[in-house]
Figure 1: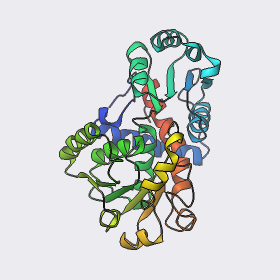
Figure 2: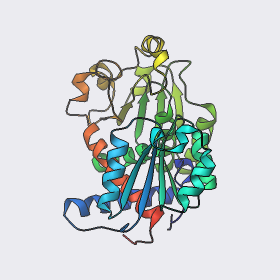
Figure 3: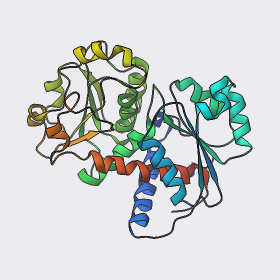
Figure 4: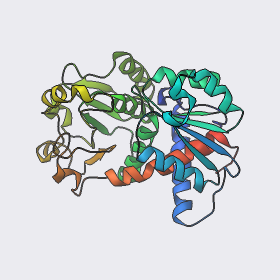
Length: 313
């Protein structure tokens, strides 16, 4: 199964087999790193990393990962490129395609990523947009698989704003046959078109993707509880209203009581302790958020190897 020269913009675009293949390669690369085995599959290659949004995990995982794979990563933010001065993204795409081997972009508009991929002749990886965060959701699948072993038929519950993270998790769960409930208040439901597409994907793997306003009902019997910040980057002006509207959508000890005793707690970070998740739960024995953060490195390395090389791992 080859993903060579393809883009990774959305998990919806991947087949069930391609998702499984990414996770398999991520496991193997993680093992190689832990064992000290060289794995410079991208030696001599260069990755351009375009950032319009601030980042810790995305930058460090892509830059470190590309270095471990033997290549060189270039960090470029808006103030360092002509994009910040109004150069069309289609021009940037064609210029970079003649100089580097792949592009990772973390930005606001998903349409910008689609345009970048349309005009680039090299692989484009979506490092995050306001609509989707596919690399994180694939990472979450690896983390769940490591600890629960079997994903198909499990119950995954996302709590809070139906944002880019919720969207990509719906696609991810659908591809592996995991039942997902998005627990959100009215006005914060996920995008209806994304929900429709995820439900189409879910029909192929025999699972369900639903939205539920009652958080306690949603969390009943959950194998995984997941949350994200209530106010994402670019939404700071809405913070006070969001704090009020999402106040009851918190992962805390009371919510954990209605989930399974073995329930995993995940958060894509950064976390606002005392808002979407309590300190007690985040630092508790059911929290796997730092395993999850580490796995960004391994999954994204797998994505880069598969898109940018012919290596058989």
